[in-house]
Length: 512
Image (cartoon, rainbow, N blue to C red; front, side, top):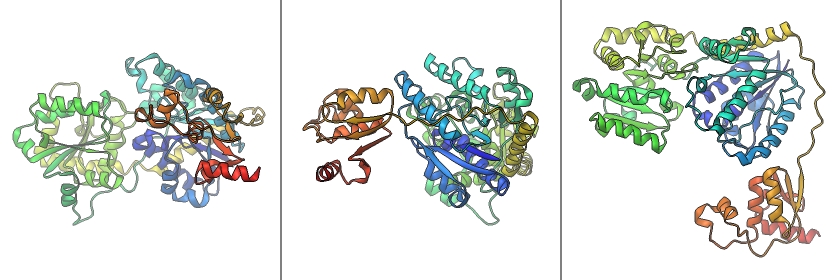
């Protein structure tokens, strides 16, 4: 069986969250499981970052597994309505790239992407049997979650892509049941495969300590209660800060709250307001910002208690990682989290006033409870293995193919090249307008203009506000074309192969 994996989930901002970790881990486990049985190749989006980092992480890919990139076609994000034509062109090219190796299975790793970046979905359902990982449908639970009509339209389009897939692989039982109810997905078209925890998340070795390192690295000077995750409203980080403020003064004196994760300035201001309102000092809470995996493991291994108060989760990877590191962990008794935690003593109801603070205080003051959560959590974490997730996923795909038989395959359309634009000094301004609507390759002919672009919008695209009124030079036209083109050549050679545009044009004049 030939399988093409869409790897955009490790290239968008999701690569900094659980989705990126999930995509990498399931890919690695799938390779090891399918070795000698199935042919697998990876498809990256050249308009996004992260491919090199992912390939370095997936050691088996560098040596054994084919991978390729499609594009780049940039400026396709759905938040800008003017990108619609470019996005359609990019999706058509993406569809052809997915089908170019005539795979039996196309596996879409993260469909709900592309609102604020250049992530893509296929323009049409791929010819091969199409599978997608389903992380959650959380935006459908809150009508205000998606905001304006533009984001709602984008999300609806992504949901339609999911519904067209032959098989969905849900990351929890809760996600599966939610999809059956909210999307009217037939039960036999969606399978819960779960998630796993990477082997790097393990308890401290005997005699090992990170206390000095964490003091020097983050300024953590005492025992600590920890949170790791996002900061949107459903994560309930404000409720966690309020609960910490409600602890006895003696506990706050001996335990600092450590909040791990990338925080934007607006969220940081809201958190600071809550701290001030509840009389907390700056020294009561440590905000680490984004941390490396190595530092994250050290934090998990050293924390006294990990708290995860999220309102809705497709799976809830952070508390599982904490338990695998030997930490006592508690989580909100909602959505998929009871599937992960299992232990009633590790659950609380964040919506009941005072219950979160009471549960934190109970764990911190009861050594017997603390020990039970640590040992029980560590045992529970051993059930979540990525090789088992890969096996369930592959079995579900194989069974679905056997049950339904291969879908009648339409002939794969002949790939048509993107438009090729011949541009010179006289036509460049008009060509830019067309290029921004429908991307393609550009070949520059003749000498550059004496002066650079003067339009304020063009100057802003090149240099931001600071460069809008700065006189330009002719080679900036090439830079402007490269923003929207898939490739710019001079005398048939890509401009990046030359040390400068002027050198390229000098070579062109010699050749001519």
